[in-house]
Length: 461
Image 1: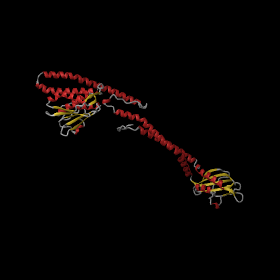
Image 2: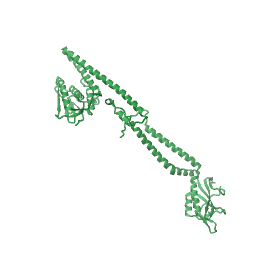
Image 3: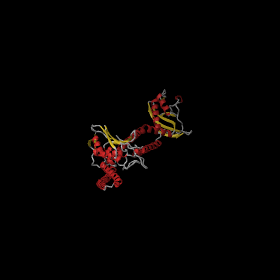
Image 4: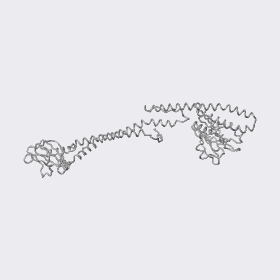
């Protein structure tokens, strides 16, 4: 199934499919105009051809209407076939001359109009020509000789017509009955085949565009597929994949640098904190240690971000979410007690198994709980609930989340007005962890106050 990928408008951009179809259509229109021009030239040169067909029909009818008269010579009877032939030609005249005696077999009694006497064709002439009558109209004249049962007769046919009308009649007959019935279906079939061919040829481009949209920071290892791509497009795809290789190499280098820096900073910071505490100076502890704790949290979370982005961290382990959550809270309990706050966990005894990385999930829960502790007043509890399904809810008793903050709260390094000294990485880490588990992290305000952060993960059997 082909998925339509929305393409933003760009100045000077054009549709290759539409352009090719327009050019093919223009080519066929030009071909039709050339064919029409050729027929117009032919119509001007052979404008009498259409009239010849009517003359031939009259000649055949006259040959069947001439028979032996009472005097033994030829005589003309107006048969139904001759009447129909004369009615078909319309305003015309007819003379049927006995070649032996020169007598005209057409008499007034037959109610057949005789041709004008002007410019009669010479004896023995067998052909067609146009003449101008005295009233300015064009006369089509034709002379034929034909054998009949009563002898040979000469037919002088006249028809009041226009050379242009004859040309148009012939042109319409040729185009309408012979040329257009062939060319028009051919045109439609060619355009349809061209359109289908273009759609088929451009389908790999849409697939490549869809694949490109799926490439993100968490999937930098993806590359554009080259199967089924036209040879003309392969250099572009190859160049794009090469650019992605270089971007991935640079990104991996930055991630390794960040991980190394964060890892190397942890030990000196721990040593420095221990030395400050050994000074036994309460004033220094009260002013300096909170800043150290903030720096230590930042370094720890930078290391967590580096671990999440590392391609060496597997997210395919099966583990119990309830057990992981209990272990994480047990580690954080001293921190909560030191702040005169509580951690209250609610969960069933039955294990809830998911597929992912327990260390990463523990970091995410730790960040959510740490964030909830900052917004919970002393003497109150941060409530952690593990629901069947599986969902992990962390609720604080703070002011809640404003509508403006809800749009940006999961962005890296974004801190609200009441961040409480946070560095803006905890919720971003939790969000990334949920995505790596094929889940999601969302937030809502509790009915009686406070915010509820909810990690939803797919449970496995």
